[in-house]
Length: 414
Ligand SMILES: *Cc1c(COP(=O)(O)O)cnc(C)c1O
Image (tube, rainbow, N blue to C red; front, side, top):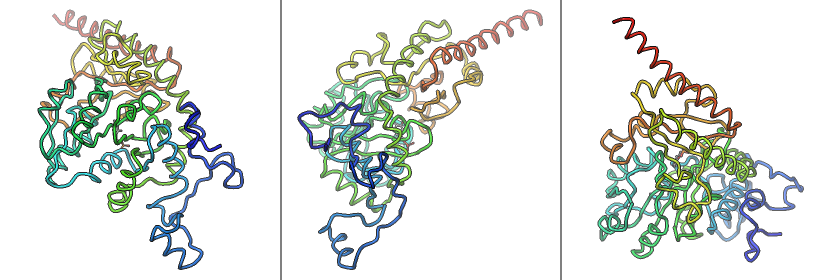
């Protein structure tokens, strides 16, 4: 059965995660596709080599230009994102830069959301202006802001949703409609959701990118990215920036991500379920002044669940009521959560955006993007959720103990 041509009865995405892109019966019938760990491909004769270079004969040439293992991943991701094709990249940032630089040139203007992944912000704010590309950052909360940012030379609009680290959700319908109306290339970083929780193509988005480092691979052992779009745009990306700047994916990484994707649906379900429980626990805790999680009715993003998101994901942000030092002491007290950036792994992670992932922002830029100094971000992993809550509880208890200690010390000192 060719899953991709079976359009009328398209299998469920959970099934596509496992089967799409696989050449059934190929490779001696191996159940798991072999890893083509090869840099180059041998031609039968000189004429064949010439025909491949001329594009007259299909077939592989050199792994930077294409590889069967990487190709399986690309076809799978295109099926999952309901788009025509995909290009696998060395890192998530190679996906962001590949998508942007393949279409932007000096004199163009791009509109971007103020609050984006720290290095995406650095690319837009520090690198693009060097090459004569103008950037306008906006909140993207309402259509007036989009209209005000529009210029005659605007070519592209870039954002991610939910936004890292306060999980604010952008209205993809508004975003997509604006871009279509003004004929702009729309780009959405879908890393936080994975294609199982959100398909930007449903809202007419042109290019979807992922840091495959996160949920797609899911096991914390790969850095990689992927760009998904129309066949025409992917061809442009592959034949220009990816080929000539060179940020393509290693087949070994593609093979690991293919393995990771087989369990994406069960992992995502568990991430969402546990993150919801953790968010509800945090919201009730007296030491927490605010919790950012779209699964909570109190959160701005809640209205989009069911409309553009199938679930709220596995990342939770919260504000600890207390000093910066207490925030650091809290993070240091965690035993099961590891202090690390990244997200989407089996292991639960905790980090401090102001001093870690969002340090490329100045304090003023952070404030304007809604990232406070007291914000702590956790990526809820696949451990038993009661153990995760017990870990958070013992860290809160430690902060409370520190406070009562300092009070009693102060009293006895007086
Ligand atoms: C991690 C991340 C990136 C960058 O991906 P790398 O694989 O680290 O290069 C881009 N966007 C988002 C939302 C991310 O979380």
